Image 1 (cartoon, rainbow, N blue to C red):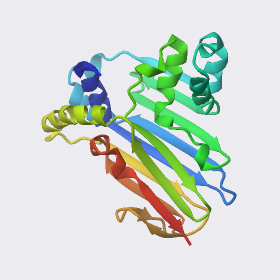
Image 2: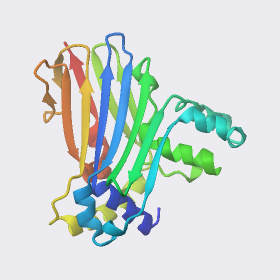
Image 3: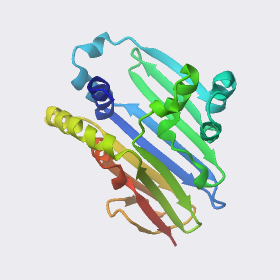
Image 4: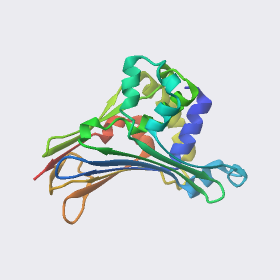
Amino acid sequence: MNKIKTFLILLFLTSCQVTETITINTDGSGTIEVVQLRDEHSYMLLSGEKYSKEEKFKDTTYVFQDYITKYNETFLKYTQSEQQLFQKYANVKVHVKKSSFDKEFKTTIVFPFTKIEIVPNLYNTEDYASDLQNNYALTAEKHFFDAQYSFDGTVFKRTLNVINEAEIQKNKNQIKIFKSKINSKDLTQTYVLKYNFPRRIKSVSNATAILSSDKKSLTLTFQLLECLEDPVSTNLEVVLE
């Protein structure tokens, strides 16, 4: 990843709010939703005069299976293991809106599951859709972590495994420089986990989690750049009564 691309990604993420919401039903089924919302005030502070000159409009909704079907000729060129990876995303639904006029830049990714263990890493969805559309090799992707979830009826686990430590270390320097430049700015850059369970929560591994009044839900808030520096810090274990 070159320095210019890294800077652009950091510019976006530093003015972004990411919310991951999971709802698990009594039978273990449920939904996971990831929302990436650009905070307009923060982005304006960072982009300066370019903010008023921005001209973008996109409003599209798709199910990942649509890409597999539409670009099936490309899909069939991938290896069997790569095709199986794409198939894990088949039921993922994506809505992307980027409007300079409405000042709304938001991406919503939703996946319904019968059991949470089948949930793919939703943060890779748009990259994989782009690969199919443009016939890109998956080996060109530089994903830093893999997100996995499990629930046995009582214990829920969210586990992020680092898969490219070298890239994370390389980007830490860029993040450090970037953080020094934005330190004096009042920016919104949060990463929020909102989890809803079928029974009351007995314990949470992260002491900063806030429980709802009925103790069936929790909210956990991180600073986004800190999560990029240390993805494993977002790991979580929740034990239900």
